[in-house]
Length: 342
Length: 251
Image (cartoon, rainbow over all chains, first blue to last red; front, side, top):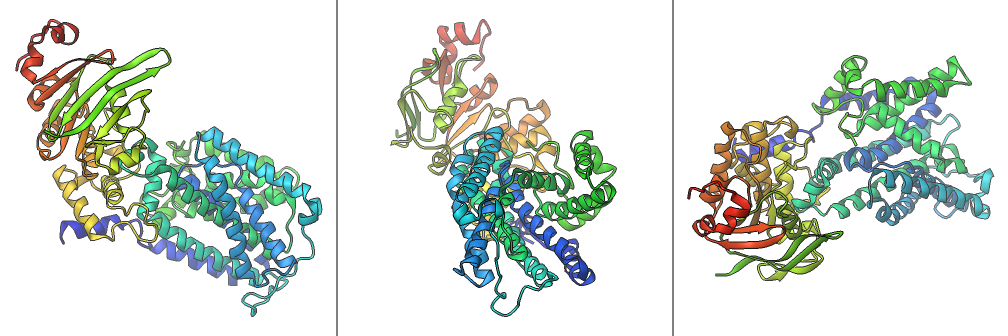
């Protein structure tokens, strides 16, 4: 083997599919057949997973923190709702793409505000944009339905063939297909030279520019793409629940997302997916135990994860999950956010 | 002789402090030029202006005759001006393979490719392999940079700068902090840089300066004190007074 092909082989090491990954997706697909009474909660998890994957693209790969990612989720949700309600785009898949593009436009426009400044500025700017949109949606109630939200949305069959059923079966498989396709795309992007340059920017922006990487342009590109993903997640929300209300913009939604990634870990794409499953299951578990105070326990778990020592937790509590995740995503993957993350 | 890199009346102030004073410096094509000066002379500030990290208050910077004063950092790199950092500025989580791969990809204009896996272009792979072996990094190419010994990190630092195929290379204290046992590799690598690359060396280590440079500029308090061939500079009483102290210099 020549040195060049040897290098090529090693460079693609991360990009190759691991057995664990294939197993992961087979398990997800199997859930669709194993738990027919749970489609609604499982669809909810898929949406959250897609939404979290979107944040992972900017947080885990490019190091952009955001407390307002719900802005894009909300725009996607309302866009999909309005398109269906007024019969502008009737076919769900097409409407999904249009809604995603609407969020993408907003992402591109606001990216210029976000790439400037440091973490705290970014948190405030992103939070501000989401609050602004929430207020706008409330103000223009003739379009958005105000605090009542959009009501009476009727979804047409997917591709004109597959209707949304009341058990949520179609919605589940539809969401799963969308999630998987977008995952494949994201996977290709993060293992490309472009994706690698994002990791370089996250590691050391000064040096990234010093080897010729146009830092701002790359950040704008990934932020715009992440907005598209979040918009799709929002549109899926409206399409599978047939409602869109003001809480799609809410800060809790953005904050939950951060929690999902703290649980699942960032920078290997599966963090959002695994985090979404664990987060929702914890929510279910705690709300069964204490219907009123479940948030207390969620909070406690997170404080433990973040403070008691993410590094130590790796070794102890998350020993087995990490073993599985390493199988899925290779040597560098870990369950929680590494200590060096800033 | 053509001039590779030039500053004209460069001036930089931080508040009321003049850190660079009316600095006019010419680095000839193919030169091994050293910029020396005591701590706080403003050497790093000059480097930062040359590379575009800092904007001068006034004055111009010319790269091969073209005004680059207002170009952002990454565009200067693509024009052939590359640098190493005094304190390693690497990507702790990335491997040497990935780090060099990035620099090569950017130079060849493939750095923005999002549809293609890293490692699928043979021209890029070939260059990476070549650089890894030239800089003695083949055996650690898959290790995370943060885990490498300091000397290897220094080598990677220089390799990354070379990967951009610079015509002008700024070396900011390449041997700083490297243990004696690993110095030899660094000096050998620096010494074997191709002659068509113009090198501006910023260095404290006088052995390295006098063994490497064919021209030396002395910077004191942001201004140029003197400039000349190594033996001239070593003899200069002014230089001895302000920079070298009473210490005698062997040439």
